[in-house]
Length: 283
Image (cartoon, rainbow, N blue to C red; front, side):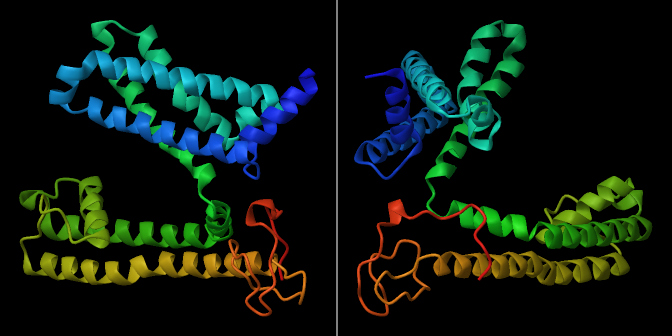
């Protein structure tokens, strides 16, 4: 087998999902990611870590070795290694292996806080699962299309939070715990998104009235981004359905994982072999 054919075969297995070997590789990688996260969680339990510290450490070294080999192979078989390394998934794959190596570089006790922070970064491995969520691209496109509306919405909310924070600071003052405007803005944020944590509570009738208004306003505010995202998600799903066309009756509107036409019952193309563009055209 030549080097070119080897790279092509590895690319089909590692980056593709339409072959049996590719599906098996993905399943094994998902199991490895979940297992490494389980080790990460168990390591944070003092009783478990005290009894199984050595075993957990060896497991961690083993997972890091496997992820390192995977990362190197992805760079090797990728048509554009530099582009992959700078992509979202490339950065996530790198973050999945860096913490263990950095922890080995800083073994000194004086660096324990740094080591703890570095090791917690292993939680980024869970983001490696994103590439295996079937409809993640639809959700990402929906968020991308709604970004301007959501930005405008959060800008408006930020203005309201600042106004409420300043008002409660003026009304209550330092004697009731609202010692500064930033602290009062913090109160406005937790009150408008929940009902407050109880660490800062208005004592005056006017302050309590303002808190009640803030809580009621919070219910209506939280519904806005939900509606924006739902509308964009529905639009993207409709566009996605239009791309799945029946070869017999040419009807569209099928789900992305549909196997048979809902109009004539004819078999549709294999979902794993359908080519869906990153930015599908509008219908």
